[in-house]
Image (cartoon, rainbow, N blue to C red; front, side, top):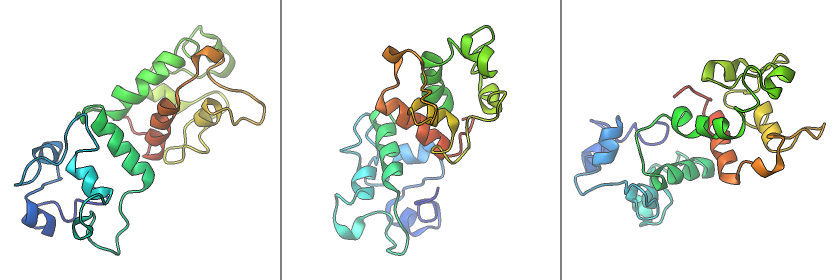
Length: 190
């Protein structure tokens, strides 16, 4: 929507030139009149990434207009990751973020768990997660850096507190990236 839609919808120059309609998931997956732009499971060969990353001829790099910045490095990483895991029409929170929280956090952060008893943080669903702790919210939509959940997951607390408590259960760099990207994009229940 941010970088592509004004050209790649009916009436737009990109749509008229290529037939690529980015108004819907189905339009993206259909591709252009020349063929698909997304190869599920393979971001490197997906024409969408080739064009966005500038690995094609300079004159067809996307977005075309020199005055418009293209997707940030973080946005490109997220697109690449989405394509590499199958380019599914899925809900990011439900399908990617919540399973991470469920695996690493839910054992303690539900009624009766140690984390819940000490902080009041209930992570059984989106609404409770967004409510936060008895001390305040843990997620600042649009700002992962100041969101307490990321401060704790990344071990940046000035008091040395890090989550999860058990060292052998640390989130991978990629899992932290997914949670961070979800927060930076508004921490939506999608």
